[in-house]
Amino acid sequence: MIIFKRLKQFYWPDKAYLFGAILFLILASGITIVYPIVLQLTIDQAIIHKHVQLIPYLSIGFILIMTVKGLASYLSQYWGDMFGVSAVYRLRQALYKKLQYLPYHYYDNAKTGDLMSRLTADVEGFRFFLSVGLTQLFNFAVLVGFSLVVMFYYSLELALITLAMIPFLCIAVYRFDKRVHPAFRKIRLSLAGMNTRVQENISGMSTVKSLARENFEIDRFAETNDTYEKRNLATAGIWAKYFPLMELIGDISVVILLALGGYFVMNGQLAPGELVAFFSLVWYIMDPLMNLGFIINTFSQSKASGERLLQVLDEKEDIQSPEHALEPKRLEGHVVFRDVSLVYPNEEKPALKHLSFDVRPGEVIGLMGSTGAGKSSITQLISRFYDATEGEILIDDHSVRAYDLTALRKNIGFVLQENFLFSSTIRDNIAYGRPDATMDEIISAAKRAEADEFIRKMSDGYDTVLGERGMGLSGGQKQRISIARALLINPAILILDDATSAVDMQTEGRIQKAFRQLMKGRTTFIIAHRISSLQMADEILVLEKGRIKERGTHEQLIRMDGIYRHVYDIQYKDRELIQSGMASGRGESL
Image 1: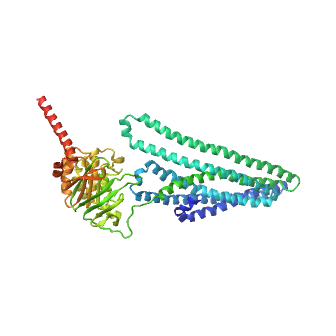
Image 2 (image 1 turned 30 degrees about the vertical axis):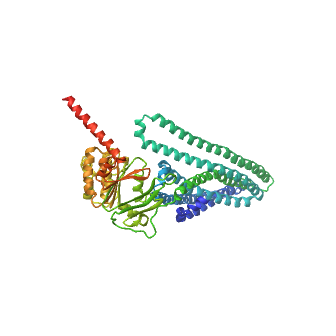
Image 3 (image 1 turned 60 degrees about the horizontal axis):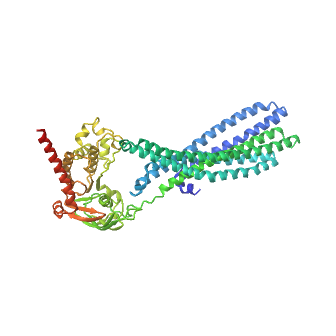
């Protein structure tokens, strides 16, 4: 019950629905007990003692009572559903909110399919117990309690025998729960793994098809699906073992009660109608006890689901705004790194080692280096996606940890190497960071990003609805919409992570021209592999294994004859060879 205690905050505010459902459940269960009593009166009084005049009254009374029971059952079920639905609405909202504020590094290892499974299948599993299983549990307790009271009234001996049989059923149910709960936990894990496999396959379908790996993916999914099937079959085996056992215990009880009850009737200790009523009450106990397996089943599933939900809710939000955070509307953009080192969570080797540099407001800094050199790590520290392991990062003479996270990040514009566009209109995608932006501002940002022309040629212009992840747009078009989105928020600090990598040389030239105007008065970090994207920088930092190996302007680095000069020679010699080849081709054609 620890899991349910920890999740109490989500369902206890709706306790009025639960209490209402229980109240009408008690009423419905109490009325159910009336049926055997009416049956006993009909047999003993109306039939055996020939009091025929009682039959119309018993019939009308029975109909009225059953009508009340039907209404009470409806209200009990409806309010039970309201209790479960309202509770998981609050739970789902809390989970989604938690996912928004979890630190950046959480998503480094998180699997999308697994998270989707938690927010859907696991939440639904928890809801089903609150809506159905919990009320069924109360129904079991109330019905068994009421039945035993009437059974003791009819026959003390038979009631005691019935009570003696109940512990055997309870032991079987307990052992069933001990085995079925781990089985359901494994099923939940398998379902999450299967969802992850499907999600990754659909997202990477272009790669699958381009490499003709369809059969490999089919086999890989079959392996995951096979594990899910085996775990379901193992759980079904537990059901198949314990339910016949519980039924056997119930049947043995009925045979014993029938033999002893018949003996009491023959000796006059029990009237025939009382025996019939008693056996009806026996099934009112046996059926709920048999149904207890279903209740245990839903309870076990909800426990397994609750464990997985708490794993998300318990994740630490280790990067948060301080208690008295600075909330500037506009930063100047003075960025200072003082002996900064960074080791990512669950990693041993540092990504950055003792970096120090000072970027004045409005300066443009180029970051260059091979994959894993630390370029993106620098920009992620500025936005506090991660916190430095050692050293200090200052923005406008204050530590980045002193700022409110929202205020800090609203002053930083990102254009990433991998652009994400939402399944919404182009206008909404550009205005995502500033939903209050006017249409004129959106168009202006699109023009500066060289996107306005191709947007207007689309079917609905700025109101064109994009497919998932910008499906239908070329890589360069998606890149330019992302650039427009960054321009619209008018950030004090601009970070361009290979922002022109997906556009052709001609478009890159137009975007670079727009950037030169945009960068005036704005601190800019440019991550690029193309020398042409870095030439405008006031200073270029060449990184290698987390350290600054070279620094200076484009002209200074060319003269150093180091890493930068080597890359420059490769890129520009390749360009010269291409140009000479094209010229040679034209000469031959002439």
